[in-house]
Image (cartoon, rainbow over all chains, first blue to last red; front, side):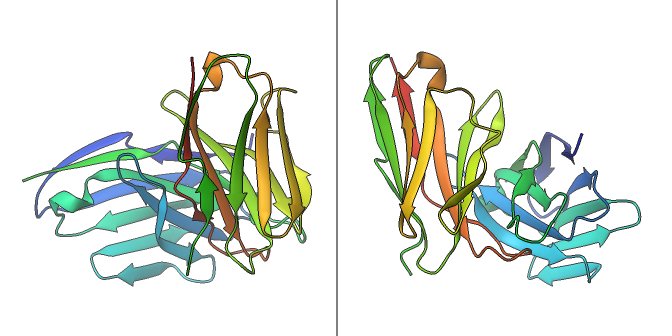
Length: 116
Length: 114
């Protein structure tokens, strides 16, 4: 079926190191890929997104790469800090059709722990 | 900007009672989404609306769940009768209907059914 797979489910890194989270999707027509960060007890917050017409996007310490041929996209966090500790979700619009809006399918989440 | 507003933030009630969750989307957004989040099942889409019309309710778990959007600035999710397994955090999100637009989440309602 149409889905989004996310790996790893948990990730522990030392402060200052990089963290990488990978997602794969099933629909080659998918064209929008947001990433959300959810801190404990709080709402998911959009941190970065990428559209299918670009292969990479950066925002300070965060970057996202997209490989449409392989149908996977990744989140890269450099120089990690303790406040980066959270659950990160990737998502994609699967089967985008005109008029269907922007229904997102979420990955299962990655719990990131940055150790000081 | 006010963001998506949900109420109540917390709800504790006994099983069998009716529960109504409320959501006010961001002004101007014409898509609204209801999600449920649990440790076991993650983030699940229950239903979403475009221009106040329900588009996909395939995620609604059973007939005990219903959702309405009477106008562009208000939506409700109702559970009647409630059961302990309905305990979860329920999020509402909104966006512009056009494809490739981000969804913005409310702070959620933490629901506990005793």
